Length: 263
Ligand code: SAM
Image (cartoon, rainbow, N blue to C red; front, side, top):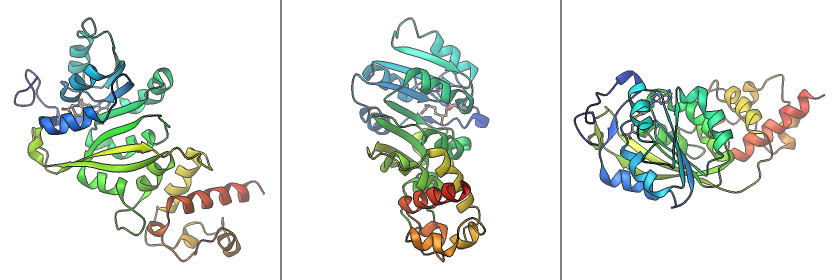
């Protein structure tokens, strides 16, 4: 389906609708998902990615908030027997759909207005395949950033709990209809296969507190909860700032906080 804002459908700005029209991007996203596997797509809209993914996968569940698109895809279930629809807000439905489907992959051109909190939720799932996700370029840069970078932050740490993030492509505004004001980036999250040493929820709490004030030292962020000796025992310089700590450092801090809380 293709048209100004996609055929009979007008883009709804409140739902972050910018429909992908770049065939190269559609191919890159779809081909990252191996044939015969299972997937969830977040925000199919009129189906730029959906149509290509449906041809490849054994089963696809789509999560869509917009009534028009949910209805459009509902009508297609008789011709696509490998398609299921979850109609509603992904922030409310995601946990249940993942628990029910146990998918190998999650894919989506994500609505920009919720991409931060949505990624923090997505990163909590350990999928055997991985994720292929489209972001506003700045968010993609934050996700793939390494320690020491100005844009390294909570999301950069959280996605590394189960995944290695990799940039696939950057896209100009013209790759979408209507074009957004910003560039976009497709990121692949590839499972690294290492067993995490702490629970995701605990890591998330630490990261949230640790990055609350980027200019404070780590010592001050966790003042009263971690001592100089604690930092010495985990080999972290307490004078460092949050953006200087690697994923493993955040795990060590999390484990120490849990230990101290239990005292
Ligand atoms: N996948 C289509 C494409 O690439 O052309 C559309 C992508 S558009 C950027 C984002 C999609 O997410 C829209 O279909 C929009 O209706 C849907 N969406 C926005 N907010 C949502 C939410 N909270 N829950 C589920 N879907 C949402």
